[in-house]
Image 1 (tube, rainbow, N blue to C red):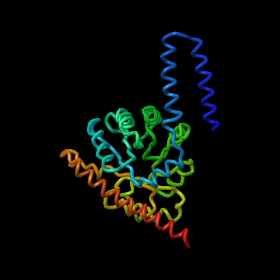
Image 2 (cartoon, rainbow, N blue to C red):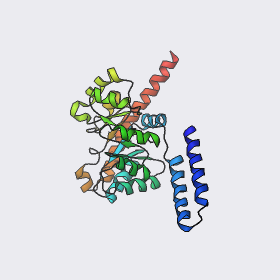
Image 3 (cartoon, one colour):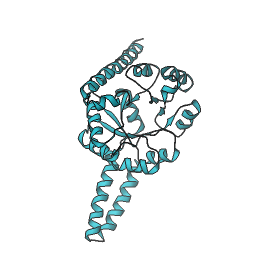
Image 4 (cartoon, one colour):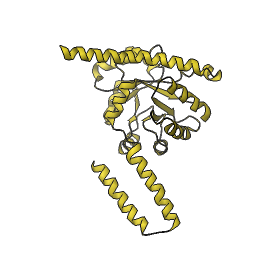
Length: 271
């Protein structure tokens, strides 16, 4: 609340200052500042709890890494048609900024974010074009601080218990466990959950249709899946319908876990 009041006061002062200089350049500047203010103060804000609730509901994030803008659009369209609501655009995708902006306007019911954020300039540019969350493969405290000031969920990457705990101490909403395939998938995640069960974890890097459910069962709040859904061969052959059906099967499996959680919770309430 105090942050919102502070921003509003700053904007009011800015507005009064600009109105004292009534020329065309300042009027244009004022127009774009108003637009930017509206976007950052309303559209792009998501607190950590809202983000965690979304992850628990959806259970999966479609990771899009495309050779060009057109393929990226088709990959996202296929994922969304299959039922996915969380779309992550890898920032090293060709025309990633344009892709995020396009998807935000085309699919307002979905949550569009970015991944492979490596620098401050990457993050600021991603937020400027409308990214609603950001993943990085590592832990960078400067990036975390910037995202938290903008109220954008940012998920640092870590692998070992020490790295995961260090990332968590930066007061992030959750931690990306990457690359999960290299350390044993569900078995490793389950072992981590014993001492670090209070930390929401999102495994990525080797998640497949076959092992996604076991990762959720091992304690993941959600999984990030990309390359195994959108194989090079499937993209080359434009097998979009096949990919869409695979996504539907994946989500059906993951939703069954949500249903089990609800039944278990209801049963405990009756005891």
